[in-house]
Image 1 (cartoon, rainbow, N blue to C red):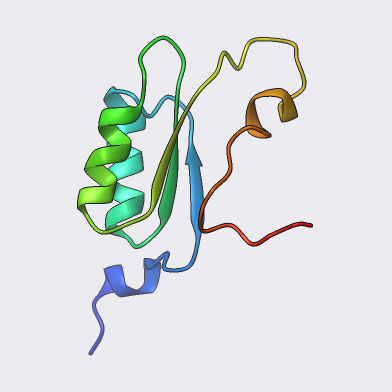
Image 2: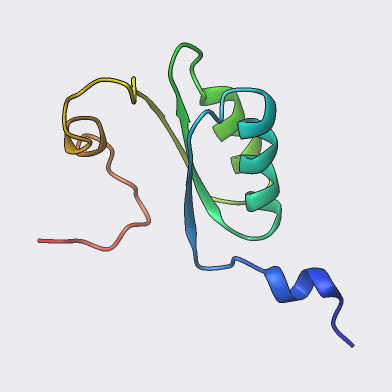
Length: 91
């Protein structure tokens, strides 16, 4: 019989966690990875690279981005440079 946590598996999904550099954001990013998700970790003042590396050590795909989400520039300005190796091609 499957446990309750098996109903919440996220295999094959990708999560974007803002504020993943520390605190609750870091905990959520790691928990999502433990549930099977690949995780894009966002950080503003603190780089999220250490959290992305921790997620990769769990065997999940991860990426780190740094951006100020309060900036009024369109999200594509900070998202476009990020090329997830596991994302399907849009060309």
